[in-house]
Image 1 (cartoon, rainbow, N blue to C red):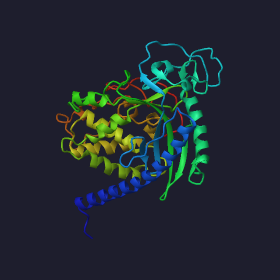
Image 2: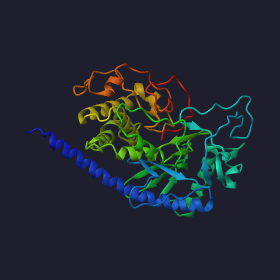
Image 3: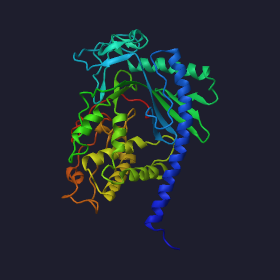
Length: 393
């Protein structure tokens, strides 16, 4: 029997990638119709929440983590003119309204408090006790309000046979029945902050100038977002900036996007199958951006080797616990969510004099112990830090 050639294997894998794209497009089409219907009803019940828009093309509010696992960011409104908090103060409150003898822990990594006074204009509803404690807009309180709105909207929209709440999780999760499979969605209230780049999020290092300084400033102008995904602290998110970077991976004529898609297919079929994989497509995307940032532009073989090796390390039990803590948000601009490569033999196509990525990582670094540790422009991994945790997204 004749062995398949490299071209035959490539055609087979790319055909699977195309089939996946068609299937995901169909699922996203059905899901966003349901989400648009639900969130439109929610926005009528509570003016603080916006409807997730319906889009015929790419929908930036829906992130595909796996074929049956999506992240949906639900924008809020009534908060305009964000500015960084200049004064620090201690917080002694709890979610139940009692007082603590010692202050709450300050946010670490890319987490922060959010005060209503940080906005030049804010609707009076954001000062109400159902979401506000001592001037802070508290994410756990926002999630509590939002959960009730989702439950009511499912009944009002007559979607009980198609959408169900997943009550065993602390975040707001729903299961949506589509024509092909059941999809689990995490609905996250999100404060979108355009044109502002947070002080904590310093730009990652570039051993070669990619992207250019002008491109960096353009990407920063998209701003960031704050996700309600823990008790007291809001999580900084850069989904839009990362998507722009991902779209520009091959501006030099390379094929990194194709490599990323092929390895994503192998991850879903072989390395991390199942409904809730421990390594999602977003983790893989973040790792792809890190490799490209630190060694732009690696050869195709080197890129594949590094990405495949790091995915296999991420799913391995010895390194899974410190890397993928519950509540982790894979984010290239938050390097604590990315794995430094362990000590391993040098790949055949990777030479120390020509590959900056390998030169930079010849000495093993400490493993990160928190999903949000470190600054964006630091190649070193800091000492242990703690973070709020919840169910793995």
